[in-house]
Length: 412
Image (cartoon, rainbow, N blue to C red; front, side, top):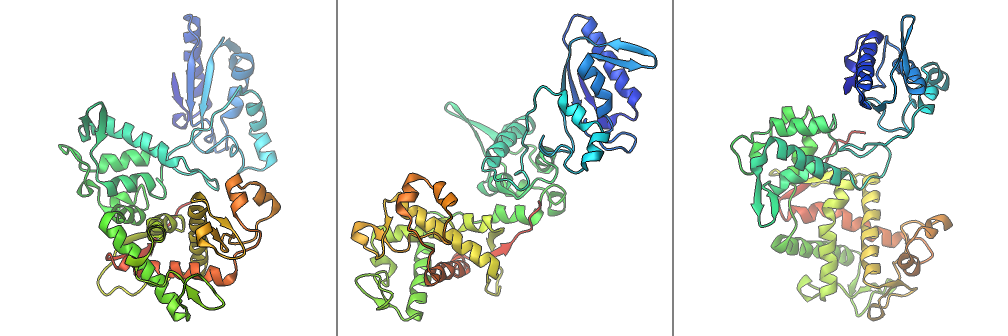
């Protein structure tokens, strides 16, 4: 049985629903009753429905006029429409208001709860799994509404979808109305008679903006894919930016990195770099889209005569710290450790230091490999500046492929 309390106009509507529950119980069944949006208002009072559930939940009976009606055994399931989690239930009210609404009494009668996460990240919480939830929901919605997009390949059923469309559906900043917005974007897309979900199938920007941040969504659709020849081209461009900055700072080619003598072993053409150093540049380029997304930016095709893009100070610092973290992780995964002097043959590097000095508690949270590899101090300012140089070079690197960087709006 399903009852949506937002559709009820008064308390007597709930009594009619409880009579149906009672009838089912008298027929010899244990009713399973789903009360949707139980946390909506009643008579302009927040959580006004709660008091009407106390007797049925506690005593298995409800009162209508002067008569008490037994319900018997039943299972009540309450689904919230306002609170995103049990922890958020009643948090927008004062303690007295929550008590007046019988919130504590209602909670005391519950036998359990489950926080059902939707397609968006919870507010103010780390959630790396929202993409998996979106993928499951997206496959289910498309199976139901556009099953012709799936193709059988051996023992697998594969969705025919443009990679940019899929990226936007899985990674757009937020679906404004949760699953309903996912369903609406699919319903508004021109998929009738189509066997592949192309970019041209997407709804107009004005329609998209009802359910997602259209600018963010479209930017992700158009975001370039870094692989093969393009990846190598941009890795070479990244190295050239790095070399130019070092030369402008007075560095020359030398057998090893020596800041006192201003020599650096990587001051040579990209083609002459050892493979591990080429891979460092590829890693930098591969991670560009990830860093940009975490800082609220995306890559989009550049318009002609577009002025060069510069990251503002706060974002520059954030992106530089991310780049250093990426570099450190790659080094640690390859077996490098910190030492006071860099020794490449023995995989020792003086810059395997945290962006800022870690507290004892933060160090305790490091993995064993990280704890053994990371040095004790903070990364020196001169080395931080090298990471900032790499970040400042991102727009120049992307310009080689005809792309630029834009800040997207984010919704909390």
